[in-house]
Image (cartoon, rainbow over all chains, first blue to last red; front, side, top):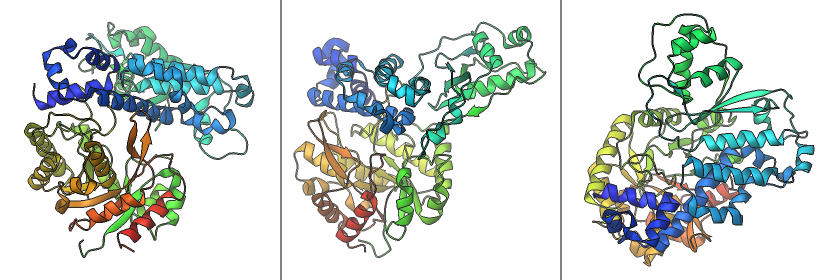
Length: 277
Length: 268
């Protein structure tokens, strides 16, 4: 094992709670090479640093993705980052793997429970509170690493591409929630569907999703030729190719090789992009 | 200490933009840890009034820098018109991309790692056509896997690449603290003669660590004294920066710290 590989062992020990716990219990449990690296480390201190990193990792993401709930915390008295100081989070820490989707789901569940439990008074003041929590949770989850995708013959919806159905048109008021206001900005009450996608570089984007886009995504199983799908949906094959390229850039679909360039036809219904910082 | 004007500044904290703009006579430059938000109404003025330094995460120099990361760095460097770019002496992500601590963490100090850092730093400098400064990162726990001392690794890196040393005084204090060494003795082992930028910052105690660590807080007088001691041994230094970037940073902290730093380093 060279020093770059030894560095990887240390990084995994820091980022992967179950791996760290197994190695601390038995340094030989992951093989002789790992044991050779571990021999040179102060494992008790490394464990403390791993816990510190875990709390820091999720705090950064809670602060970023739950920024609207934070901005409203004077009214709700529920700063979302407070969950990271609870006994529930502490008991979770040794099981967390930084970047892992299941770990992010576990932390997200804690956040949702904390923010929506016994929240009738909050809902009276902020009627779109549940939607806001769901929106931020979807963002938070989208940040996690995607599971490795099986190779498929045709484009497939990415497992990290999430559709969220809301009762309120939240994107209409989100920027206003971060600015000082006398009266709480209230979004229009109308069904709103959003698509969350994570790009290969890790950038999370949300776009409005109409019925045509939803049907297209649900039809992209990886086993169906997009041309056949377009034909079945009554869509123009030429514009579907353009849409697929946009969706691939966003990370909403995983394409194998190139899309067919033989398609021509009409435009897929417009989807308005609302990339978030 | 060089004869040319030394910039004194801080990090750009968007929630403190109004106060920062009002302190333009006191603050020469702003280090940019994140790209500006698209709807940041202050950034155009910030860009006009201050020298901006690219201090974002570009990529770890332990591994080849992918084209998209180079392109992003190039775009930011042009947006900021940065006189130099900064990266950290860190290795935070496994080679397969599966594990990322998403926080500064130093590499093992070995010959092989040094070779990798030199190669990748040269690619970065060539791509950006700007000087590079690299900041040292402390290690919290003992790792007896190094082949060379940190100071040797850094000196050889800077002498081979021509990059400048960005000395973070709080990082140095922490490294000395966890090694059980007097801070000045540890500092003397670093290539201060090659330093082009100095960071001043504070530390605070963390319960997870049972001790102090990096924090977005004002430096103590002791820390500023240590910074002054190092500063007097840095003939190539071009900028001194208060390193604090956090939404937790309160109004007043930046101008107060820049003023204290100027006084302590005789840069008034």
